[in-house]
Length: 343
Image 1 (cartoon, rainbow, N blue to C red):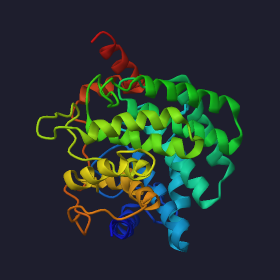
Image 2 (image 1 turned 60 degrees about the vertical axis):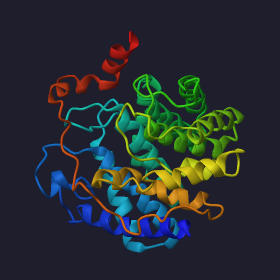
Image 3 (image 1 turned 180 degrees about the vertical axis):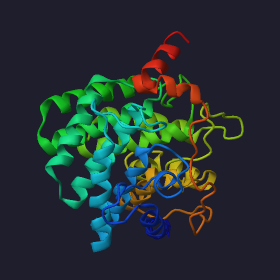
């Protein structure tokens, strides 16, 4: 049964993540998962998105109460705090990078971790507040999955801290996400179609729906799932060249939408739903398989899925467009917005 396979994948992945992390007591990079920096010395900066690995560990701890995993979670979040810039953003592709993506996704991972392990430190909360403040002042309307992550982070932390401004801002960002769904049903990425990243947005919206039961999300998800069900796989082109699909959103909506089961079955038969093609993906997406495990309802007849995690790339290299490093300190999402505004 695939729920057992999801669990096998996450158990195998957690062992790999523990090996990624610097566990040397007192080390300058203690808690860092970005081993291209701390172990290999192949990079001169830390990609903070790799710290999202703490959420896979937190999901695992919540299920199995492993003391060693607990220690690693604490170290991982402590190190995440040290990476934050003064404005609340985080580095992703260079030391001085002020990345909206890193702020939204890594803060969301830490928020979810705090909720799952039922533990926090004052410094963690301070840093999360700072990231929320940054997200409130910035929008990502070109890569819409990132705006969805910010909306979800503000929703969850707003509920956790009973912060009304965060909840209001989360609602505003949710409207941006829903407004950027095309008439055909996919969620815009670079003003175009990308099934992989649309499925990531669906994943995030499924988590939003779980908290709010917002019918607008159910209607939006239904439109996207109907698109997937009727999609011509041979003739569809992904603008961001993805060859994977995030499965959790389909698992979550499978029994809530009339065509949900059929779309889930098609996804399982047609795509790489493991999406752990590189060590970076292991850090940023392993926990999504844990969520898929939680959202599993019943077995379906589908092709056999790979039994083991197969990593094709040891680590993700620096972004090839090095010239962009000149503008990253100002926020690459702002440049993107100007570029696509008139397209």
